[in-house]
Image: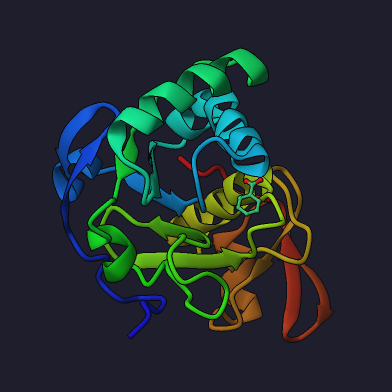
Length: 212
Ligand code: BEZ
């Protein structure tokens, strides 16, 4: 059965481009992004892994560990990383799992037989420090993912984990946020000293609180 939000992300041991890992040990207390790609030495995947590497410092800032996976063997990953670095002008530092025995793909339901019998689709799992699944995404092989969107969702999740707020459509860091409907307006006025803007009793905005 596929993993759903709130489920515990399964642990696994894997061979990667950076050596053997235990997933939970690799994550430690950090957030995690585990994402699959269909195959090494393919064009869209090359741009996706390159973009992720370019954004490494943004993932680091948010205390997020990144891990890629496909069913290709580790020697193929190592050869391909050279191409990614060269063509995308970057340096891939995160590990690529060599899932040739399909252990990780099976645990995370990353092979969708009606899309491809053997290759992983473009799945993304964001995992919280509590090892629970916080977000899942599945894209087709022909569409590269937007990694700024993944960072944006992580910003929202890290903010809403700390404050009684939610983030509206197309929200980005610094934009106003929505006050939880569980909070009465008189309490909201005390909790959010920067002000409460009430559009409807169920739709109230305040300035974004600091994430830390
Ligand atoms: C790609 O990364 O370009 C790709 C991979 C598998 C199928 C189609 C495209």
